Amino acid sequence: MTSNPSAPVTAKQPKYLQIKESLLADYVEGQPAGHMLPPERILAQDFGVTRVTLRRAIDELEADGLVYRVQGGGTFCVGPAIAKSLKLTSFSEDIRARGRKPTSVVLDVAISPAVEEAGRQLRLSPGEPVLQVRRLRRADGEPMCLEACALPAESVPGLQDMDLTGSLYELVGREFGLYPSWAEQRVEATVLAPDDAKLLGVPSFSPALRATRVSYDARGKAIEYCVTTYRADRYALQFAVRRD
Amino acid sequence: MTSNPSAPVTAKQPKYLQIKESLLADYVEGQPAGHMLPPERILAQDFGVTRVTLRRAIDELEADGLVYRVQGGGTFCVGPAIAKSLKLTSFSEDIRARGRKPTSVVLDVAISPAVEEAGRQLRLSPGEPVLQVRRLRRADGEPMCLEACALPAESVPGLQDMDLTGSLYELVGREFGLYPSWAEQRVEATVLAPDDAKLLGVPSFSPALRATRVSYDARGKAIEYCVTTYRADRYALQFAVRRD
DNA sequence: TTGAACGATCGGTATATACCTCTTATGCTC
DNA sequence: GAGCATAAGAGGTATATACCGATCGTTCAA
Image (cartoon, rainbow over all chains, first blue to last red; front, side, top):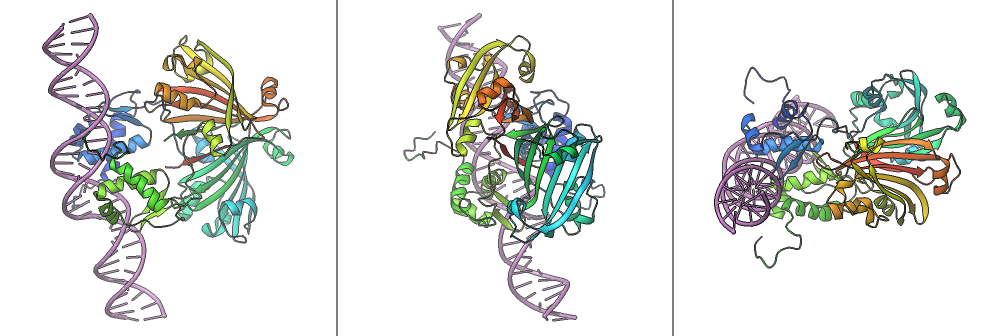
């Protein structure tokens, strides 16, 4: 980099990411479905980069499901109605995205030796310490779900004394540099045991949705094993999936 | 195409895809988690291509979640235990993947004007014809779910007279060139109405899992709107999600 | 023995360039 | 007016090359 005094605030992001953002703002956001972007060669010239670099930026937009390309045809927007997040979201993010306020009550925090399902799913040796957190989570004060998370205690030293009423994802990311890259999830229908039903404020044996999730970082290391039980009358899981 | 008599059977696949397959077989499949691949420069030399092309092949493997890269470190396998499909799967594919045999009984086929939810989700004008199929789906003969699919009739002329007992995805792909690229899905817990319960062979008001899905092609055009009701005691939805 | 500096090695970004393949619109012929 | 050939223009693949930035092992000094 030169000693250019007007260096951008963008903190040394690669060009192709800067161009991606620029393309997003200029040609994608707010555009109707099927709207065509300028040809790659023109855009490359406009941005003063090679077509290779420009293509890399569009690759990103395509991977995010924001545009699609037709060989010999052009590059087009998929439209605002679509383009929903294909992302893995936490409860907090999800509830906020629906315009409601997430809160939590910590029911239980404990560190115990890895046993049963949690230890096996986290791929821990029997006896290794596991931090377990049970929380009741609400949206605008309404009980929505019961959540039982287990994390390898060695990955998150001191977590048990922190504020656990917010997003666990945010917390372990900020404090321990652990960022889930992807997760395996299992969803089933069940009925609520009396204890859980009471906490959620519904009759015993009401229908419920149970999601069991194991989150991994980019290296494939298990970060978190989490079982969440949702009230069926107040919550539905919503997500997008890619094929091929 | 040249008249080269020793043309590969690989039907003119791009080099980077051929290399991807080759890397998969030679360095990824069967390798333990954390196993390191040779450096990019070496691999490029071995395959007789530029590093740019070689990197493109590894990009594919990384996007499939099969390897991860560490700058300055190397490229590593994520391991066989992980690397489950992040793909959108059909019922047939899913059941087969679990080692069971999928079969279907067609309960109902009809073409009617687009009304209600189906028409809205498929983004059709009111009155446009919609093909609706209701099926009872089994695994090894056991009733697993009830499925109600709706497709724009104009996209699939003659589908109503074809064999609908197999995979609908496969059929519309083969016959009409329609390939779902991604889908939005909504999953909720519910209880079975008496009619549905009877078809699934369980008592009325048994718990059930209901998945509502809209599939789109790469252009963002809606292909299919589908509501599937699963027996809670026999089926759980399983999938993987990416985060960023 | 420890620790800091260095260099080799690895993946990450970017340039310039060439040619292929597919789509689409043009325009001519019948 | 319908239909087919053609050319222009779009994205897709691949080469060769250069340098940046992070990691890790080694070496050398304190």
